[in-house]
Length: 107
Length: 156
Image: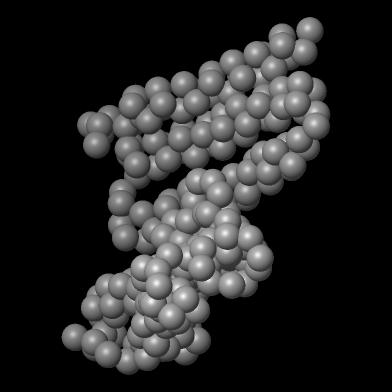
C-alpha cells in the first residue's frame, strides 16, 4: 500500500518535470519558457523529494535525520526557486527583452 | 565612463529572501567543511558554498553596500591566512616529533591519545584553512569582476 502512495507521488513529480521540459522546448520566448520551468520544476522536484521522504520515513524509521534533511531541502527549494525565477524575469524585463506577441516568430 | 548604464536597483523580494537564505547557506557550508573528513564534502566545496553566499549578498544588495562590509585588503589577508593554517598544521607535525616524521603527517600531533583521532582532528583544521582560502578567493574574484563592470577601484 505504501509503495503505491510513494510511486504515485514520484510519478506525479516526474510528470510535472516532464511538462516543464516540454514547455521549455515548445514555448516561443523567454518569459513563457521561464513560466513553464519555474513552476513545474519547483513542484516536480518538491514532489519527488516528498516521495523519497515518505519512503524513508516508514522503511528506515531509525534514521530520522535524513527525513529532516529532506524536509529542509523541500522548504529551501520552495523558497529559493520562485525567487530565482522572479529575479531572472525582472532582469530580462529591465534589460529590454520584448515579450512575444501572437503572430511573431519563435525566438 | 563614470556611473555607467545601470546603478544597482533595490528589490524588496530578492533582498528579503537573500537575508533569509544567507545564514542557512553559510551554516550548510560549515557543515560541508566539517563533514569533509568522513564523507562527501570538504574544504574546497564548503569554501565555494561559503563564497557563493557572499556572491549572493553582492548580487542582492549591490557592490557599494557589500564593499563597505568587506574590503579587498581583508580578503587578501584571509586568503593567506588559510594557506598559513594549512602549512602551520603541517609544520606542527614536524615540531611535535622533532623532525622524525614527514611534513603533513597528521597522526603525530598529540591532541588526543589516539593516532586516528589526531589525524581526523588535524584534517578538520586543514579543511578549515582550505575553506577560508577558497571563500576569500571566490569573493575576491567576484569583486574584481563586478568592479570591472561599474567603476575601477572604489565602487560607488
